[in-house]
Length: 312
Image 1 (tube, rainbow, N blue to C red):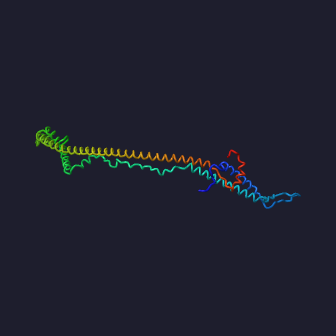
Image 2: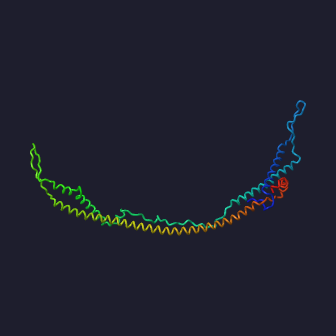
Image 3: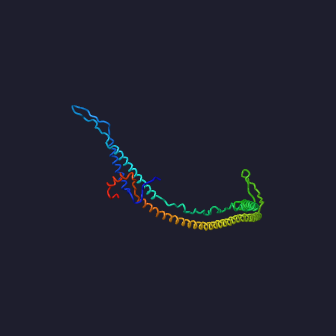
């Protein structure tokens, strides 16, 4: 950091320093103007019996050394004043924008909440239920399903046996067949089934169908029950997980919020103390004045008397 000449409550105010700097600049401009027209010779011409001046003689002023010293002193004083004005502005800006150091505040990390979905189980379907059957049970089911299907197909509506039983009473004992020229000859019809036989066959097959259908329904019900039971277990498992996770997560949240509250209170205390110090520092800097170095004292005194009292 650059050195400066700022001191508490003694010296030039910033307003005085700025005004004096402006006056230094104006006087330096005047001197520069005086020296900008200096030349080495004059010019004149004789025209029609009269001398006409083309270039006036402007030699170096007799006090050239003093003028240059004055100009250098003005710029030196101006540089001194502006350096300290900028230093004070920088100090005020730094003080006004300063932030409290909260590095000692230990903010808690966000809790690692329990993820219920990670250990949750999915519901099962009938495919899972069939997979629970033993190979023997599955083979029995396949056999029973095939027997029930094909026996049922034979005896149910539109089945072969149903058709035979419906047709039997309608079969005549004889039919007539036309051979030629309208001559007819009898066709003897011999029934090789009777209603009693077909009924007996139907009853036997119906009983067999019921037996196999009962086994098919047994396995279907068993699979459905297995699925229902498993899904009940899954639901309980997931509910237990959710309840346990909710309890754990709630405890974690309470601890986190407690620690966060304590950290925020600590941070607020630090900010309050820092702000108190910061405002005092700003007030101290604002009250600082420029202590004029002896090198620049003559120049400052020269212009200070020209300033109004309001700039004190």
